[in-house]
Length: 233
Ligand SMILES: Cc1cc2nc3c(=O)[nH]c(=O)nc-3n(C[C@H](O)[C@H](O)[C@H](O)COP(=O)(O)OP(=O)(O)OC[C@H]3O[C@@H](n4cnc5c(N)ncnc54)[C@H](O)[C@@H]3O)c2cc1C
Figure (cartoon, protein in one colour):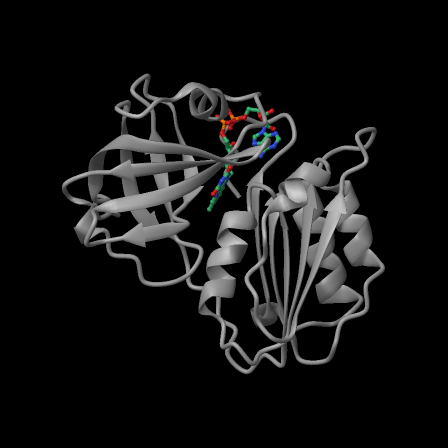
């Protein structure tokens, strides 16, 4: 089997904007970024540093005319990409390859549940950007502390947002999973879950078994996994 090579884009950092103490927005510019063929929410690229480390990151915004993208990176401090993002400066180079990712379908949903940690918040926000405005949406985001909840969710009718402050004594993802295990779901829910792999798997199982949601109504992906570098779901 041959795989079509992903388009690659040589880019430079043009702005570094802290969004919260745990999340930084990197704005990249590159002369080929107008050709980045983004088709739907949650699409992502491999972001490679000059040292050759590469990881998956969501395209939060694409400005084809300006040949720019924004990528919001969690500063968790444990991996090469997180450390690079904490010290990167305008003018530094990188390579983006992609976009990649499957389109999550919310067709026929009467209610949408979005559950994320900081790493999946950018993708959840791309979904919110695209969902029909009248569709009721409930968002749960697990963050490290109250400063992590400082990001505004978009103003839209029917949006209920819950910022869950993580208990520092418990593994990341546990607060999100426990909350969802005890949350009632409206009928006609389609769910999108992403974040730490164990917590995502726990919630997915719960939705499929306890709530008997059909598989095509539960979109889930482990974006990272405790103790595993460069996790692939
Ligand atoms: C489709 C997709 C889209 C993604 N979009 C984004 C995005 O927009 N923004 C974003 O920040 N991340 C995003 N991620 C997650 C990101 O790819 C991982 O967090 C990645 O592991 C970070 O690389 P690293 O070099 O910092 O850490 P790695 O070298 O991969 O891991 C080193 C250690 O850090 C831990 N670790 C990794 N990520 C986290 C984390 N978030 N919090 C705490 N500990 C962690 C690992 O368990 C491991 O022990 C996405 C992942 C996928 C699959």
